[in-house]
Image (cartoon, rainbow, N blue to C red; front, side):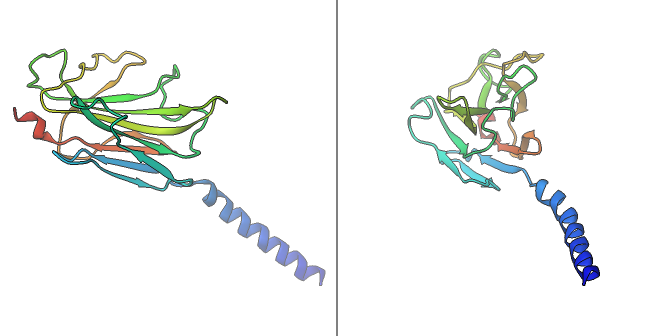
Amino acid sequence: MKRIRCIIASSALALLTLLLPCSLLAKPIVIRINDVPNAAPVITVIGAPNGYDIDTGPDIATPGIEEGGIITLFGVDQFGSVGQDEFGNDLGWRFVIPNAPNPARSAVDIVFIQHDFDLFGNGDLQVAFDSALAGVYYATPPDPPIPGRDFNAGVVTDEWVTLYEDDTLVVQFKPHTYRLRN
């Protein structure tokens, strides 16, 4: 009888040893933002364990200037380490067009990671984006990059661009080349 209990206990321990590492290696949350021309963006969120909220309302962006949205991942990275540089600055990226009227203002899309901090110092992870309307341009990102400032994500494309990727989060954006036509 002791031998059977010992075999069962050993088998249970072996099973836990096999399963535990797998359960700790959860897949990252994937956020895909498709900046559809002349329409609402198509946003896909995959793997948010506690749910999420998407806000593309008029209070998010400046009407007549830009469209945008904020995706809030409830209960994810509440103390703010995901999406930050070595100095603790939130990360951001800007897509540019080479034919902007002013080279100092050539960005047309901004994507950034931030945290919705509350009174207790913790906050949900957020991915936000702004897309300039026709004839509007954001400041061109600095080259070389400056800590705390947005990175140059390159010229707009019709392909998916992975802007950020780690064990917790993957952010992909599809800016579209319709802005290259004036």
